[in-house]
Length: 311
Ligand code: PPE
Image (cartoon, rainbow, N blue to C red; front, side, top):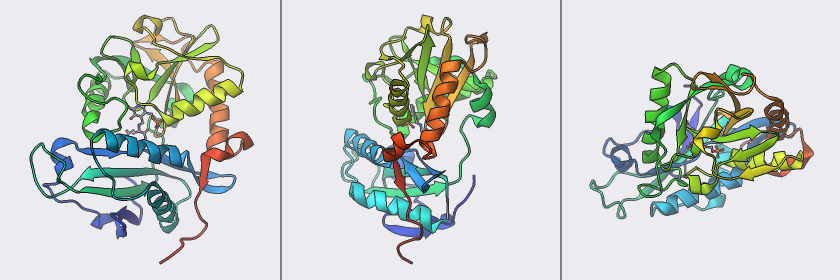
């Protein structure tokens, strides 16, 4: 991976290679961590973090779901992140805050173990590649179902939960596909391994609801708002797996992946087998929003100060 100079660790700016944890860190053994994936873009108004506050709020929601008290305020995390980007001299980057049960004791009762917080920033290209974004990706419906609310907490972005995504991702990769699509525990369409899904048919855009065990994506929310502003109807509803083969267009949204058309599902072309007109039109406005080129979405940007405020 691309390294940067500093990582913020429990309040301090630590050189990249010194940002280490003990092997008996609780989260390493039991997945007791919650994290975020955020992006900073080189925008018209300088480097700026996309929907920063929304990501921080979700971090706190995830932490609460697992009884973790983050020992910093939302505002402390926000300013530390802005400062970290400035100190690393980055104009665009991926941002990974993670709160985790640290070193102290083992065993499944975690509430006595301190919660640590680190924030890392580095340059990270698109998750499913530039060509995936341009031409669309080939997806496989996974034999693994997305975690259900009966076993875990689908709305939380917690470390351990990603074993589910990893199983689906590896299965798809071994079978020669770019990405896996997971159904929920009752067989409705849920999401990709790290992206939400949208389906277009007869000009109507649909996306699964919270009750389909999705992670409530911030990119998903942005696309819903942009689509509405473009005069499209977006229907949030349960989507049967049977609807995928008859969709005109399918696309995925996520911070790491941004917005990616799906051109094939289980070896059948989606629509005409390349990114469709609604997908392309949405993508163009979304790109403008991310890069501060569309005034309507400037409020979504949290600008990074031009120079580090200290040290
Ligand atoms: N579902 C899952 C399971 C998921 O991990 C993500 C984000 C989304 C939906 C989309 O959420 P949002 O980024 O708020 O639009 N996945 C993050 C981590 C990916 C990773 O591989 O790590 C991300 O995109 O940053």
